[in-house]
Image (cartoon, rainbow, N blue to C red; front, side, top):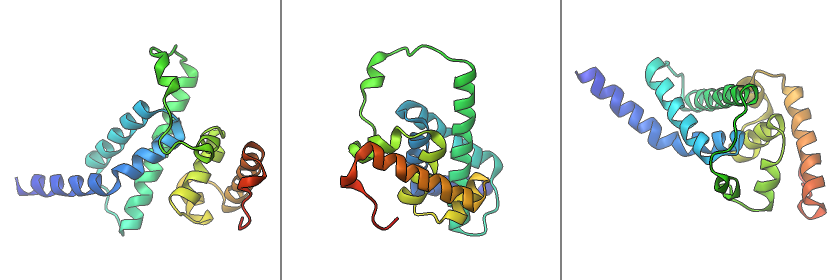
Length: 165
């Protein structure tokens, strides 16, 4: 019984520590609050079922983000192969989390750009770390980030030009 209690304490602490991050990543990948909430629950359920042995807190965080983005990809594949009509049209009118011109511009980007922008600028990961998480080459990440910046510049105009690249 003690082991179950320890696992419960561990899962509870991980949820407290990372649930906001997992939700934000899912929201940025899906652009839908309700599905992001579902994915967030699924990620922590997967953690509870697998109980991987992490080398560090950073490894744990990276695992959670990778599982989150993979679940979002799976969800998007399922949705695109089985389209449905929106049940509640008011959902489309909801403002995104942290809404503003920059957030809205990022949310309008295609998935491949939105995910690298989120991981780099919102979570602070380096290009090589993003590449490992997404299973792509570091140079591909740099290229996607460069293209995303270009698209954001077109959307937002000169006032948000990133001087630091």
